[in-house]
Length: 538
Ligand code: TNX
Image 1 (tube, rainbow, N blue to C red):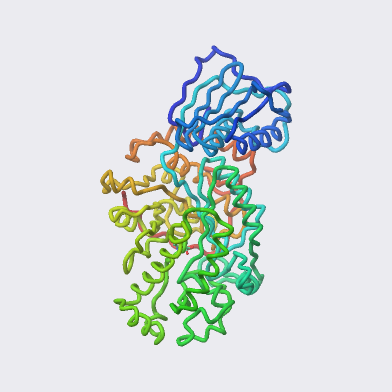
Image 2 (cartoon, protein in one colour):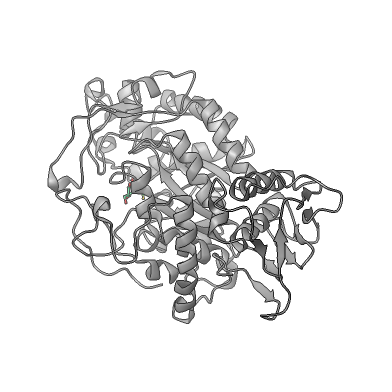
């Protein structure tokens, strides 16, 4: 069956016993109340792959229903020689059950037109399944390189196929602003485009002369949110502040530290790295971003809203008379206090609107806002501190689950950066460090793999960096693996991966082959970043 991610429990009929359930033109499909989205999805993907119409019927061959005794994402799948039944706690669970059913039909079930009309068979089995974590996320950086909506929708399908349920969309950064804000049109008119891009790591000192950019209209993003929701996925938007904001400052120079730099001379940044041009902390700037967030909340219904908070150099605030006056007026200790105060402002602002702020672990510096959740990226330490203080935590340490980082230190790896993490390394990633006691461990609501895009400039590049490692990550986030990485059955995972590669082939995913990149996946002559030391252990 080679299911990925592995379910909690599988019972199979003895080999040579039951013949399995065959699907043919007489097969029917119907979902009871609450499973409509999963039913529609299953009919559309299986219909495309098999050519079967799968009409509704009172007593269908393939049936879906809800059972309130199960948790919302929990499902059971039972197949006998006559029918298959998916029973789930909620709509998302019904979708995960339907995804498992598709895996059971074999790799050809991932194609979008039938290779054959017969021979579609499900093995007789009983599966009981539910996720380990409620937040099984992937960050996509659509700011450094814009990803067209069609590619983004395809990526949602890939997440759903791996039972991942959060798409964290990094919508703004120094190099581009991708979210249409109707009251501030310059954010996308000016902030959505840059003149050129750095090619590869900065030491290579290479640039192209090709303008780059793009943005999503609010309707584009409403479509994305609905498409994801149909598949059990929540889109969590990120507006990064107060650092990583040069694109916004280029559009509206009054947002920057105008008493320190001539912000009117700033364009959208064309380099990669950490940028000194950050927001000022005036009332007007807070009000501006409240305006941005008002429109953001209308598009994204997610409970969590990510406000960044990472990598905000404080030099300009140290040099700015206005910032220093603000620090004194507010009775703050220093510049870290000022950033913490800004994040705290939006923490209350979001709370008052029934939402919740999540930020990168730098938001701990200068004091963590009362309701904020922390995405721990610089390692486990920020997440551990936040969990002990009773805050929700998403573990995404860059040493382990940054999928923009190199998969090997071989000479052919395209634009290699960061830590070296192979498929096996990601399989051994443990989101909950053993230093946390049981209560604090309960604050770890989940885990996330982050896919930054400075060095991945299109969908195929993203595929290469994300896969196959995202399959291992999905199993870490979903399956009840031993917490001790050494106790995990890597050989079994690798065996199941053989079938999974065939699924990825059928979808058309440009993954990194186990033996190394195809010639067309290499980027000879484009500089990467030298390998740092080995990652710290849990
Ligand atoms: C650090 S992760 C960043 C990103 C970069 C990434 C590259 C984080 C919160 N900040 O801005 O894209 O490294 O791996």
